[in-house]
Image 1 (cartoon, helix red, strand yellow):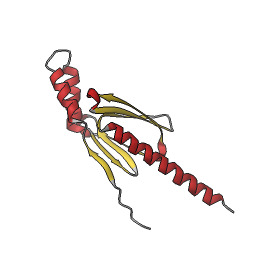
Image 2 (cartoon, rainbow, N blue to C red):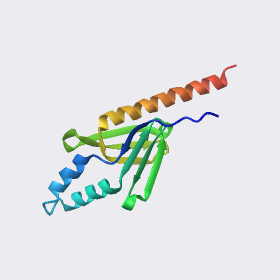
Image 3 (cartoon, rainbow, N blue to C red):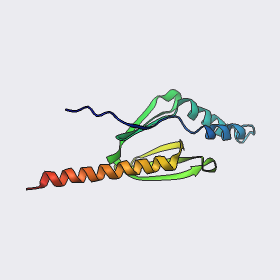
Image 4 (cartoon, rainbow, N blue to C red):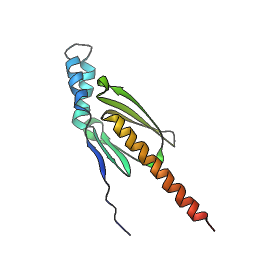
Length: 135
């Protein structure tokens, strides 16, 4: 059995621009909830995206953890935020669940990486299935 190391594509927190924009907005009374949310994300939200899986640690004091492997993902949707410097992504899973990723830095590149991993996983899975049924 061979031990394959996971290659890390991205490991870190949300985009710093998200915190800056929301702290500036926090100077107004209306922007305070957004500033508070950005501070919580900056302190405790962490992403780890490898060639095998997407892991998200977040919530209050980083107590919530979610992991998903690429063959569980059915669809990805993303939207730019912060003048396009970062974006939000939603991973729609095959079981109907959704995994939200807020303030992802370089979100377009990250989305392309995840799509590439999904496609390579599908092709390798289908190749194994065909090979397994070959006479």
